[in-house]
Image (tube, rainbow over all chains, first blue to last red; front, side, top):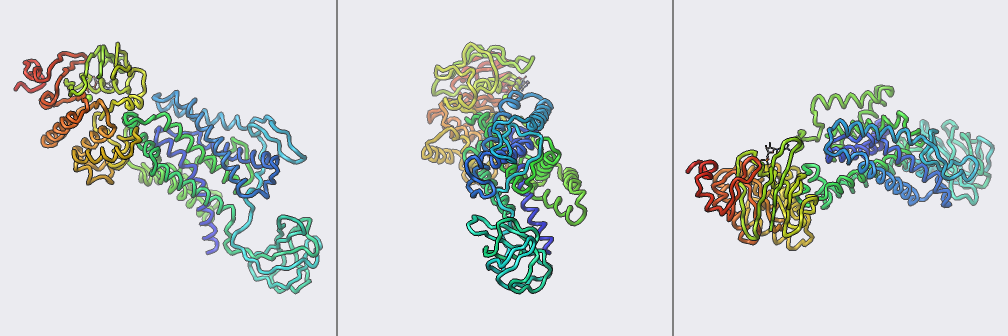
Length: 404
Length: 235
Ligand SMILES: Nc1ncnc2c1ncn2[C@@H]1O[C@H](COP(=O)(O)OP(=O)(O)OP(=O)(O)O)[C@@H](O)[C@H]1O
Ligand SMILES: [Mg+2]
């Protein structure tokens, strides 16, 4: 049961990332009827822009990334969205627009070219800002070929753990602490201890590795590794992890992605611009006869899609903090799965992209958990094949209409 | 009001218009008739800026339209209800009408105009929330005309509004066309149904393979042997 719920949480979290990316594929397809293969690379640019901002720029503004307030994280997200929106604008303006009306194949090849360009260009390294201390990263544009660790802007902690006891440390001795209060550790539960050294702004945390049982005040309690700073007299909290921990980062991902998707939905279905967008996607010529500046709508569609991709890249890097270089196959797979999500949901259909995102995550995560983790990519592409056989237009897609 | 002179359009190697000249005076209904493939739709699309063309002049109220993108031509006051209805099937009826009013910011007037449009086409009012793709052919045609009206054009280009409609509805459509005109909108009407078109129009042009073969007063043309034989079934 715990396993099942845990897997479901992952599905929702990863699914909302797939959905965010899939939306970009589907919006561009809806309007221009072509697959923007460079879309997944914008996700990567979003992730790396977030890294650059969080790891290099924030410290220079006097904000420690791991202690950043929520608005600093929001700022990192915004900047990534703006940068990627600009990238999307330029790609459309300079790579795709000159090919408007050209045969599909030409556009497709161009898209692949743009993608390869980003993957390789992204690995160049040109230090814009020197590191401001030993062990600190330099600011490089583009991003270089080395993997980097994204600072934890959102702390890795669960929201639903329970504090079972508080007190002050009676003693610290390497991997052993002695508590001021007595505690009983239950079987098959995980405990950790959070210590706030005097004058420190934040708690430091260590796993409790002692076996279950009753521990009296002052009795030795074995912990994993107790970071420096803990001293007798420091306040502590003994915390029991939930059976199904809900990680803060997953909540942040789902909340942010959910908010963006709701905003997009409102934009597309409740505003004049959204109406124009849907009109253009049905028939560009007729839309222009209504006075819609079609090129502007197309530009904005790209900007929207790529800024959602940036958000996905940012959120992804919060959860999977090791950022690989821009041509890494992990990124390629991420983009492919989101693309599959868009196709499975019905490409060109906004709700379909969201549905597809969650469906793909569901199949992937449950297959990985209950069948075999090695085959996780196989499940995804299996679903693609199945859907294409049974319903070639995708789950919510309508029959493909010839463009006039 | 509209002054087209020596308009030429080619689709690739195929030349569709070989120098068409026509004039539409303010307040009139002018019809453009001709057999399939004569170039009627091409003429309208060129005026609306959808096609690259060469011409001595394509002027609306004295302003040259050539080189202007379609969405700016609409803003000058030239609306087109395109051939084959061209409604947005993925939008609701109401949204289609809103698209007609896309260039307008006078919300109150738009609401008023919508009311007037519903008087012309009461059927649409009952179907506002419905997906436009589910309307019948005749209703779609009504919607296309209604939508063009909401643009509040000074010149309305209609491309075969009666195409594929039952005689009953054709009557209604032509009645509405006359009403629209009497309310002050100038109309350039492309029609296969030469009989009806010549009846409502003030002036007429007959297009044959990309050239103006005849032009003149609509009533006069309707009497001419040539037109009667070729377009009115010899009656
Ligand atoms: N997109 C196009 N590509 C190539 N040729 C075209 C294209 N559109 C029209 N034509 C050709 O141009 C000529 C004029 O076509 P147009 O559509 O203007 O005719 P029409 O008078 O509107 O005919 P109908 O009454 O059948 O609608 C035809 O010979 C047609 O085949
Ligand atoms: Mg035609």
